[in-house]
Image 1 (cartoon, one colour):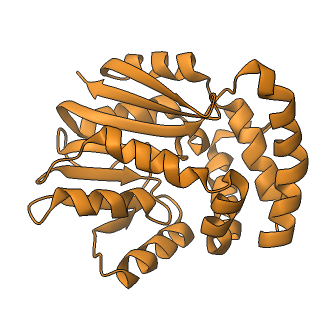
Image 2 (cartoon, rainbow, N blue to C red; image 1 turned 60 degrees about the vertical axis):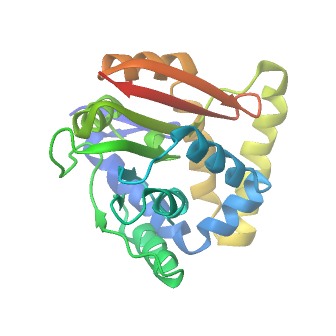
Length: 243
């Protein structure tokens, strides 16, 4: 049976999605507050930058993959207008419910569905923009997911991948200390779950670096890929244009 990574562990491919689902089931109710605490609020700036670069126009059709608690879906909904559409998706039902309830509380009603990024239930060339923020690293077959994203995009459409990446070498030791010592303790105190945040740190280290992900996107149907390093590479925004 084929294997893949789950953090630093090696697991059966078929078991990874279940394990990832368990992580997000555990942290869903504290996800937003933990994002603020562990990034010192910077995740808001990273997402705002993503929205700015996306340059969504009225009438656009937007697919938000691994949309979780709905930050990007909410921002895009304010851009597309009455003629446009934002579809909010996640593979994890607990996270999706958190996002749906949050959006509804703000009077934003969007199509919301549980779906697997590796098997998107949408027609070819349907969307003008696809976004995935902090979700690609949890996918078992990143190449399949990227090819699916390319498939559902219109020619010339844009993919935004916002993800933790490889930090500049001078900061690596300090970042490791924070990731493997501070972050799990913070998760234990706030969310009652240190293991899930230890997995978060491990999954970041196992994720392809900036250039490797760029090459993977190019192989998956994106003719042009730009890399925007944020905060010295803690996070990178990859912007791909569909062939």
